[in-house]
Length: 560
Image (cartoon, rainbow, N blue to C red; front, side, top):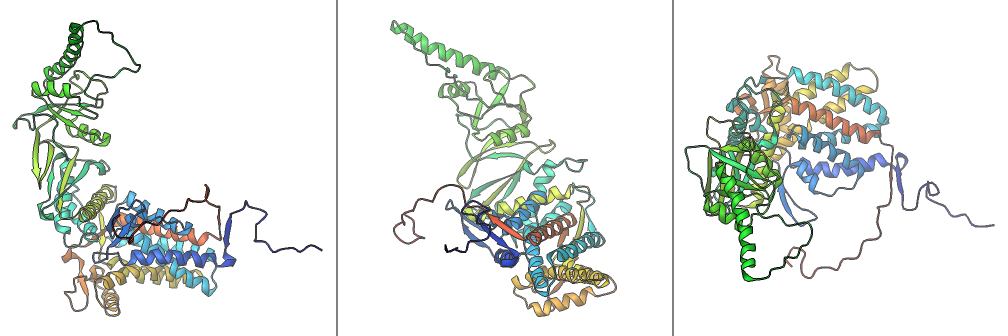
């Protein structure tokens, strides 16, 4: 009789190398444990006092940040359940810009409390049903918690009111300066009477120049390039409009597609050959100059001969190798990029008020600027700072602030909720009351859903160094006030008050309703997706075994 060896389940079903994890093996607990790891990492980075993380990615680039979306993008996460939450934070960043940490923390906490319910004997289906009921109730209640609304979306003070809290969560202490820069830049590209949804995030550019302090940062109505013009002409005369021609092709004689041989019989023919080329380029450059063009922007190379003739005709030449920057400069001056070399038509020519070269902190930059009464489609924020990592982090904070403006331009985007954890504390008590009225086992899931929101004020108090066991009871007591004033009480991260709570109206801390709704929706969806999975089946990675890599000499953190 032959011996029958035990085999893994599904061994004859799948190709060799597959691995399968089901709920019988505790798959759901393992998934929640993996999510808890990443949840704990994002938890300490939440809020204005959140800690930064240093991440060295697979390319050796060092990133210092406390933004969840950036951290999760740079980390190479392979766990499929954690990837669901990573996609949720990415979606939040794309759609609203702010609240990426909130999505990760809330989704992680929902799964943490769900683990306790699973241990009590509730099935994942019942938990999902309870969570969906609680989510629908929460979205309806958030509309009741609106405390302010942005009436004029063109007013700089009102714009700064929205961006201040968003930027404070990334750059605490610099939020007033940065929100002023963002609101000034947005006001330049958002003309009066703009319809909702007309704002394009790409209209706000950031140029980082090392040196100086953050207080030296400025906003320029137009575009700034980190390079000098190519020729002798470095600036154009101020006080009048200048014509601009944008070429997407090289400013040079085009090379032929096929190889050709030129037979020269004597020295005169050789002289005439080079002269013919010179005359051809001279004629082309003269055509451009005769159209009144005073500035040429080249998207590809600029030949020496073409540059010589453009200098002779007093035309400023700027080389812009990036096709994206070329599109933006066309937006600034209203030009059309041309794929052919020659004189532009009047419709293809753009107009600009100021083209000049400036020196900022040892770097020479070229500025394309429109005057005050003109409407520009692009504004540039020039950031100054000591280190590249610091400038990168400030740029990410500004990107979040600009994305918040995109959310503000939506139809109901102007509505504001109390910040500093005030909304979450209010939701805990309201959802708990709703859960108590719900019959059956679903009320357990709804009450745990409510409890998950407590993580936000708890984390804000913890990261700011306060005693959580004192601050949270004080917050609950303040929010139980019948007059309705309790809604405006949030966590005092500065620790100036004895009870650890502050009035958000005095501090000007507001959250956007659109951001909070989207975050609750996305976080609940992500948590429900993880809970609804009962089996994970993973195929073996494609490709053969990786070649062994020799260990580098010396210590791992020394430069080779």
